[in-house]
Image (tube, rainbow, N blue to C red; front, top):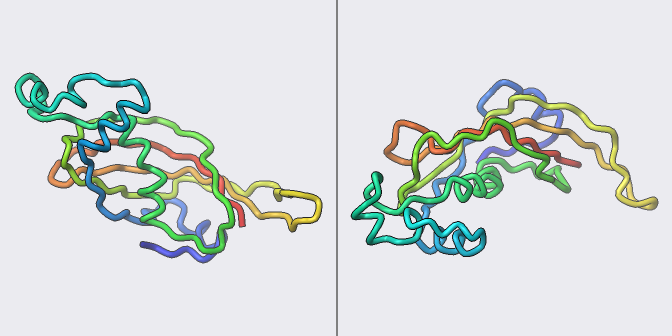
Length: 162
């Protein structure tokens, strides 16, 4: 995990790979729970036997959006910013899923800082101190252990306040 002490320190990392996350394993239970939560119960995700027999992947695969939903946890395991009091997801650009994620795979994220823009101070309440903020565009590549192609490539936009 990389520790970035301040937004000013982060600004000096624009255009660089900032951090690499821990590996996380994708389980069938996670895939099933995601299917229930989203209503996407396609057999290639949840029917283990059929996926082994009929899927071009030879096994069940995780939903692309399940992979994408791991971004906050992967970013959190990659990067610690102790000065940040609050962070919010602002959006995404250019999301792609170039390769499947077989259940049982291990994933990690490589995180680069593409852009950073300072924001006007945020006043949470009249009696609270104003927060300094910045909007960052992160280039995130999620890798699957043992695969040459990434399983997700995205630009993630977040706002952090300290």
